[in-house]
Length: 69
Image (cartoon, rainbow, N blue to C red; front, side):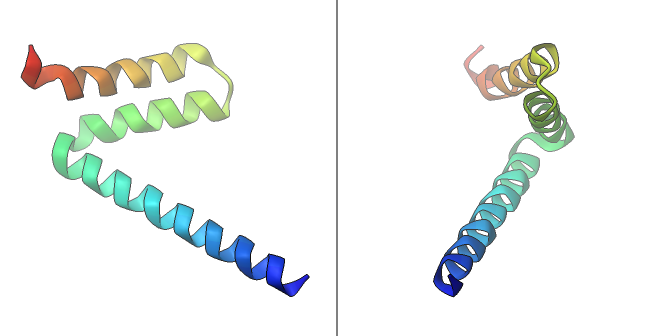
C-alpha cells in the first residue's frame, strides 16, 4: 500500500502544480478578469450551479476571442 500512497501524492502534487501554473498564465495573459472567470467557472462546477459556471465560461471565452473580434 505505500506505493499507492506515493503515486497518489505525486499525482496530487502534479495536479496542484498544473493548476497554479495555469492560474499564473491566465493572470499574466488576461489579468484579474481572467482570474474572475476561472473562479466563477470553478465555483459553478463544484457547487453544481450551471448559471455560475456558464458565466465563468462566457467571461473566459470573451477574453480569449477578444483579439479576433
